[in-house]
Image 1 (cartoon, helix red, strand yellow):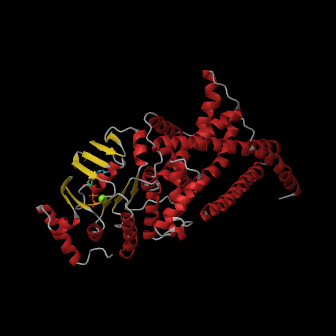
Image 2 (image 1 turned 180 degrees about the vertical axis):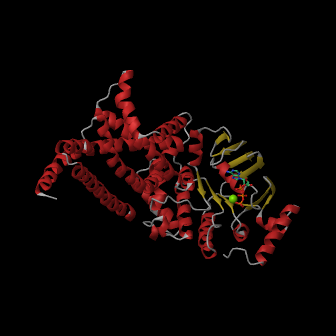
Image 3 (image 1 turned 90 degrees about the horizontal axis):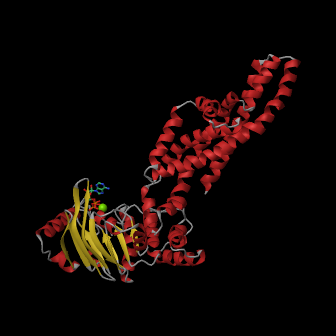
Length: 219
Length: 254
Ligand SMILES: Nc1ncnc2c1ncn2[C@@H]1O[C@H](COP(=O)(O)OP(=O)(O)OP(=O)(O)O)[C@@H](O)[C@H]1O
Ligand SMILES: [Mg+2]
């Protein structure tokens, strides 16, 4: 490794990190938050057996788990304009990522809710509480603790998956690295470097997860 | 005070309750006996609407309801006037003993936190669990959990408390402490409907015994009569069987 490459790595590090902070992080945070809300609603209508909505929820999960995210990105960004629905690249990515997260996380949350013994729901009823009151105050807090590790996994997965947004012109980290690579003819070092930056992000999240898990346990 | 009339309940085409009627007066302590699968749990669950009866009427706390058709609001209102103690305690695992008791008062009965805590503390005192009020369920023994569950069931000042085999999940050495709490509730005039296999409790604490078999009430009467001079052949068989089991050493210790 010569000086030229060292300098190149140093310069490009900031050039890649910046879109990381400006694009990858907001894309992940917004999509994951929206995804969690969608997941919670999707899980609840299934667990609560809401007629009609339950079938809709199953259909939605089926579609989004059964098709590649890349295909979904193309459909939303390149396909929908043909039927008159034009989305900018970033919002299009948010739509796809949050719906995807929603589909996967809803299964995680649904399983976590079902893992809480039904007796506690019945005890809630017999304490005079309604279904929603018991769900909100007794069942969900326990379910979310169970769902926390797998949901953290999904979050880490999403950080990496946002690189797919490069395909629909979102200038996040990977697209930036791609451009630098073709400009400098150093694909090996540039792709290694962008991989390393993803690794830093995910490592930080792993530590955050462990710390939060300990805090949850202590309660 | 609580009248249940002709409850029918089928599971998968199999009739589990075939027109059970029950009359409970204020202050009654009624034990419900019967072999496994005779529908005892189902009866209590129909009364508390955890299970929907196929048909039947109920008069409770001054209201008449169709047990099959009762609406959500009605069910909620009725449940707020009864307590239920489960075989498996079913404490809220994410709440301390105290919060287990205050939860229904605050959330369902809209009491302010301070008043709820006061009631909860006095209920926990009644079951001898005040010292453990800040413990979580997993930090308590089965007997302690069940006592907290009893405190939770009586916190809303119910007109009747339903017990479904409250000591069956307990280690034999823990049965006594729970029965003792139930006896003291009975002495204080609590109206109780108790499904149990504890014959000593049925003999000593109850003023009425009901034997259910095959979805029917086959005999009911005062414990002195039921245990000494059962009127039906079925009751005699049931008591014989119990007597033999106890001689075999499987009867729960007190
Ligand atoms: N949710 C259910 N679905 C289908 N069958 C049920 C259900 N609950 C109870 N049963 C059946 O109804 C019958 C009566 O059950 P129940 O639990 O009321 O009996 P029990 O008298 O409480 O018996 P045990 O002494 O064993 O607790 C049993 O044959 C049982 O298998
Ligand atoms: Mg039972």
